[in-house]
Length: 243
Image (cartoon, rainbow, N blue to C red; front, side, top):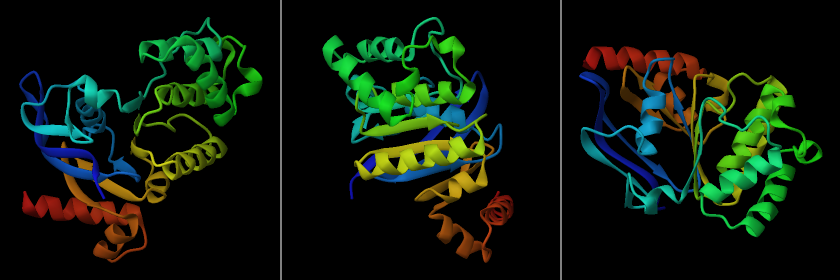
């Protein structure tokens, strides 16, 4: 199985402060992988490094073998930020067509793709409403749709379910599975244990370092527990002993 993401011993600094230190990971194609950690662990910093927004001081990132940052790499990626960045006075359909144009999708194709994604995310009935009339959950669904406009092979989603209700979280999970079954790779950040537990693999992050990586069952078995939260605490203890 080839790699969707290769992260090779990267360091990221903001000013003089080290944020990520010696981070390495390989994410195979066609999997849903969660980056799990508390607030301030460095999850968003890593996501922005993957998107070429945060320059790395050392090491290298590749997406499908292409070095980041580069147009070749990022043209294969769909990105959903933690905070929605939408044009509130435009309709959902017009937002999608506009963001599609930024990705180089031609207008006719963008309109067709927008209709397809509005149905996929359950927004078809509300596609003509201005986004300012949308609930927070509807805005998250629209942000997911926007991330899919360029038909990406890899989705990078920063806290995609933050601030949404449990029923919508379940719907997102179902949509992620459908996307994976289409052959896409999904890399998402979360601080919610049950969300991470439903992924194919989990990267545990603390204080700018990856402290463990494996399937939820592997991480729990290694810690001798049936709780991912307890496994996280176990690996924190191991990382402190090794420090």
